[in-house]
Every structure is written in structure tokens, then in C-alpha cells.
Image (cartoon, rainbow over all chains, first blue to last red; front, side, top):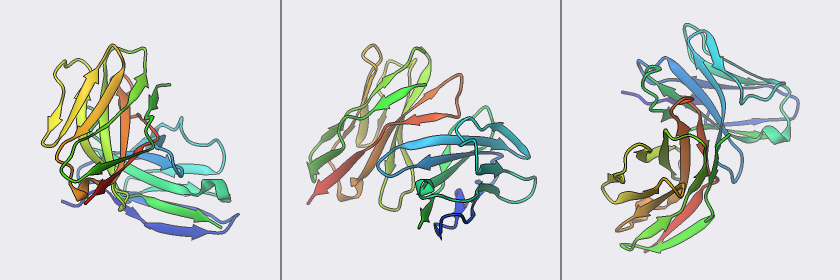
Length: 114
Length: 115
């Protein structure tokens, strides 16, 4: 049973480019959460999605960041016009259902903005 | 918003010895969950141990145990018989029972194990 799969593991972008990070939840999980870890800090909640719905995006920056979890395929975290401050590790987690909130984390995607 | 504080940026322990990591948190709620996560160099977030606030008994998982002091809002992690594989960053995290998908993490404690 594969765990939460994130790709790419490492992504390098120049300022102004777009970054797309993908997350495939564990089999049978329909709830996805994105967290960001800045250098020397703990993870911070960004967004919670269910299939085709954004449930809570209170942790997402107001501009340039968006997330989706389509009916088919992985969840995508998209960062437009990246800046150096976006350099961080982005973690995805999933859970099987709302009543069970055990979060299973992926290995993260490290974004470096040059 | 809940605040989780880990006051020890780094801790070092001799192999086979015991190390205790401290964590305090701030909340006005009475029902919540506390966690310790391990993040090795691979960066995977691994759940080490979980504590429900309504349980008075301290959680234990093999060599890992916690000292949960609800009144003091303290949640320390003890690693006994430390092994080289325990070397990692350890994060304390809080989760409300009413908003139970948001984890609030501390800044982490780096544990090094000396052979």
C-alpha cells in the first residue's frame, strides 16, 4: 500500500516562473492537506481539500497560490510568479475520511527559487 | 491561534542514554490532541506518539514516552535507550478537536546521537 506520493521531490525555479507540486494521496483517502515548512521552522497549514472542493484555504497566501484536487488525478499546489521567499518544503498529507483525522504525510517537495 | 513552543533548538545524547525534549503550548480549549513527529534527513514526517488531552495516562510507544501536564500546558517527549536512528528533527504539534485538520507545529528540536 503506497503512501502519500509527492513529486517532484526537488524543484528549482527562477523568479517569475511557475511551480506546480503534485500530491497523490494514499489509496482510499479523499482528504488532502498542504503544509509549508520554511527553513528552520515547523510546518504551517495552507489548505484542506476534498475531491473537487476547497474546504479551508485560510493558510494560503492571498495571491499567486492556488490548489486543486480534481475528481481524477493528483492534488496540485500551484505557485505563480515565484519569489525567493517561496523557497520552502511543501508537504502534502491525506486522511481517509472526515471522521478520522490521522494525517499521513508525504516526503515533501523542496522548492528552490533562484 | 494556538502557539506551540519548543525551547530547545538542539539536543545531544549518548547512544543508549535518555533524552527529554520539552514542548509547551497555549490554548483556551479543554479538548485537543498533542503529537510528536520525527523528521529524519529524508524529511518524511513520521508520527512518533499521540496524546489525547482527556486522557490522564501518559502515552507510550516502545522507547518513546510523554509527560503530559495539562494544567501546565506541557508535553515533553522522552526517548529512552537512544539509538543512532533516533537522530532527527522532532516537532511537537497541537490539534484542536473542533478544528481537527489543522496541526500547529513548534519550531522543532534537532536531536543528535553520539556513538
